[in-house]
Length: 575
Image (cartoon, rainbow, N blue to C red; front, side, top):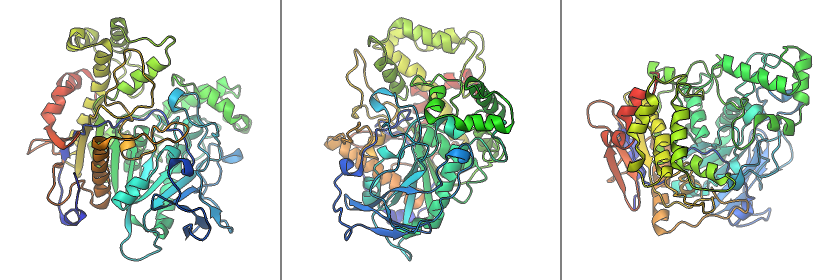
């Protein structure tokens, strides 16, 4: 089994390498369904005498013991962002005097709740700025403080919650303190409008996360954590947001390592784009485009349900949906510019993707088809033609592609080379993102200790029912359950059982992730399969986590598998 010693890590000097994980790690678009702690795992004792209690700077909290770990659910870190505080920077929670019962999650943030098998629970609420702490060692001060893993959930920044992320395995097996959070989503978290834009504005979701990181600085030592050793990580949109903290001047000093699962941020909307979207939403809501107090009041009078209706449905096609953007204060430049000019926190980083990222989106699309039917050759041709005919569409892609790109893509991905049109679609949709990430890995690799991987285990449990003719691969989000056991558990919080080989892989991942939190290096004494990624000098290496062992592949092998020579010439990737 891949068991890593921290003794060697604490003294070793690390470099870089690209890791290929043969299990699924992906970009989560859907939130794991919420579950109460009692349904997620056995709570050892509910009696007041045995429940752990911690006095934070804001007030005392009383948690529960779960799987041998002290867990504190639903700790408020900000005042509810309601009324005049809607679409304002978060305000630190006022101290409380009574003991807070921290035995249940707080409400999730307002969001669309019609996402099929991975829908969020119906208790979406604007009063949602809560965090959870999982610690194996409640100790107020002194030596032996534990590294902190601060996890940002995915979901496209319009969906998701902390409720699906059970941190007990990372805390117990890796001897770390795990913090998971809720933050404002969708229009509640990212709306920019002239009637609201006074001072710092728009990136409210990022500001929520920053306030939670400041809570960690003030309080985590009370839970046995080390405020000077905080690893910020996330998956999908959570990885994008992690990158925002690496480049934001307002997050400096709040994090010491970074983990990107399924997304290195590159290009985000400008302030002008965000403002135009906000005005369009306001007009659609009947509030107009003015910058006066009446317009602001009209927007704040909208119910959460009205806001979410405007935001869009599961198709995520709404013009109003947004996420982090360059506002000049919280985020001062494009991520790709920061990576290229070195203006970011120079801290150890770990980055990777699942092998078949697009498999998730394809499954989701087929799930909502009526009737559910397999993908066809026409579907493949239509996708390529629509995507590469000149207008790339989404803001995270180039504005246009050169003439003739459609024919080049069709020639590079001939349908006869794939067992089904679905597998051809998987490849043509996955590879551009994989190559874009590799491009920035090559830029970041020489600047900081950087570990890269690909997760390609294709047998992970799925929350989808069987779909006609559909082949599940290493799809976006499938890796999460190897780190957070409750993920994909469904509304009842039923943990998917991993078989022995999958459980061994889960142990390997937890070892690597928590070793990285301890030292900035995922390896251990006598077992160092994962070198740092270097773009020059030695051959770059990608770590492949597969069942039953970890293996490596060269950067050149990764590039060939995803046709990166073709995509780097085809995509207009800023650097």
